Image (cartoon, rainbow, N blue to C red; front, side):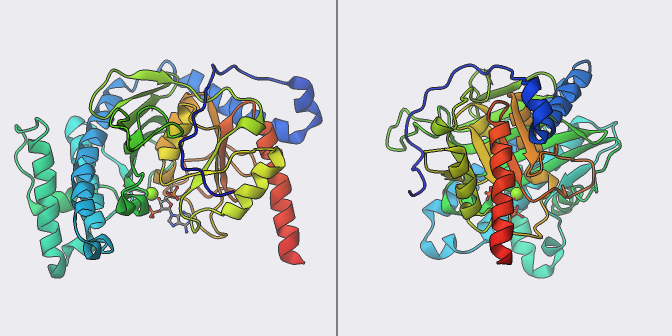
Length: 400
Ligand SMILES: Nc1ncnc2c1ncn2[C@@H]1O[C@H](COP(=O)(O)O)[C@@H](O)[C@H]1OP(=O)(O)O
Ligand SMILES: [Mg+2]
């Protein structure tokens, strides 16, 4: 069966908390999964007394502006001729512009606090004479975005301001203090194709993710499974935000009132829908297919770029997200921090392939076991079992 065209309608119910002590005792996999779930719950409870409201408001503002900048570049890119679509420069302009804008806004909002940003880009290439034209385009894009979104009181940034803002993203993060974590455009391949991408921004406090914002400019507002691009009533552009202990909310990027979202309550793997990378080079489609087959999943995969997958899963568009990069690939914290938060606060579980919670306190990399798996609490035991069995099978078939 091929990948679904993400249109089959699905109905979802209300999620309920699950705990099965006898099963937990008799099966170590349950223990591992339950431990990850408990760690997430304890962290949420401990942080319930802390408020990150101001940081969340600033993060939403920054992600919104970055989304506007990216939308403008993508629109121009898709309208241009084929030759420029295969040229990476528009993406470069949007990546750097998004990072400069987010970095600039966050630092401006908290002038008296130490500022630390762990982000994907740095300005080294932009400081060369040959790229002067690109730098000028980025500066204009940043200044135009600020001016056209009601921020005319800010003096226009110079080229040096843009370079400095980008380079604030060089922080190493780590277990102490607060660090912003940014992917200015997650899913650049999707961005180039005119498909899904996300601006992903999170805050770490003492090594834990405490808030996450995901702007997904091309994600349908209703559901990826019912979206019809030919129906003018079906709108796109979602902004997800989550704060530790406060749940996950979604609104339209254009500013509809936020609504609380929850992961799917589906317990039967047969009716479950799973997400994976559109790009086979980013995650093994063969391994995902083996895993879901073992679980009894009947539906074809929904293949999507970027952390938009976390957003879609957090509101119950589907139940499972599997990510198995090639051996040796090191996942970066900005590729998962915001998405993790959005799913965890919506009641889902995110672990590595061995059932360990993701650890964002080790610096710029996650350094995890084999892959990342995401689902609701009820399906996680079956998913973990299928993952362990499939990995064993794959290892023995590689040896023989
Ligand atoms: N070989 C790879 N394996 C796994 N992920 C990758 C690989 N190459 C790039 N990526 C990352 O995958 C993310 C997109 O994932 P998805 O497949 O879910 O859309 C991007 O952040 C991209 O990183 P980068 O941002 O450095 O391009
Ligand atoms: Mg990325």
